[in-house]
Length: 237
Ligand code: NAP
Image (tube, rainbow, N blue to C red; front, side, top):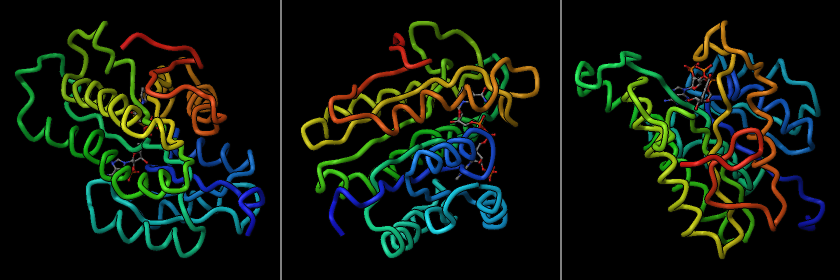
């Protein structure tokens, strides 16, 4: 198939609910092929059935970002069905121990946050970015948080905040490593959004929350890389 005719393939982690599901929906609506992934097979199948758009352009693939075997088996499934992944949206995350006392969090709280929010994103990139670099096209969107902004960091959810600051650092390093190979990598703060994580009092809808993510996932060749964005504008680290 000629490269011009091939639809871009986007893989979204934690695609079964919240902003991952909305991101999957919007990327499909923009004409990309979507790999909706998640750790619960029934939940991703249910989410897939709720997507509008060409049925052949979206698949549900089990992927637990903390399980290397599941990432590798997802890679094989995606490569068989759609070929190379062009876009990664590292959206999956957990928010353990929302206490504001850093020293009250047991080691497990830090491990859980880092395993999913940082090491999970790194593992997904390790699996899919080399093929992007080889084809000289790739977009990586790391869904971070204002909580990970070092310049404003105080006491909110320390394990989560530390994991998102580390995800931001990974974003910069990944971007610098692959900037000459067509891979643009950026971090996004979606704002405070009404999801299971954000809760019902959050001011933003999921549509507002994913707007910048979708933009970063579909950047043109001369788009930014190594940045941190909210509402499509650069944020201080
Ligand atoms: P959410 O509704 O709680 O959804 C989190 C998603 O992550 C779920 O699909 C969950 O899957 C998945 N997940 C968790 N651990 C996983 C793992 N090991 N492997 C694969 N998937 C896993 O959260 P959200 O609000 O949509 O958040 C999306 C992103 O935005 C996150 O990165 C979050 O940190 C960030 N964010 C959110 C807000 C907000 O106000 N909501 C603000 C700033 C940043 P299960 O259903 O299996 O649990």
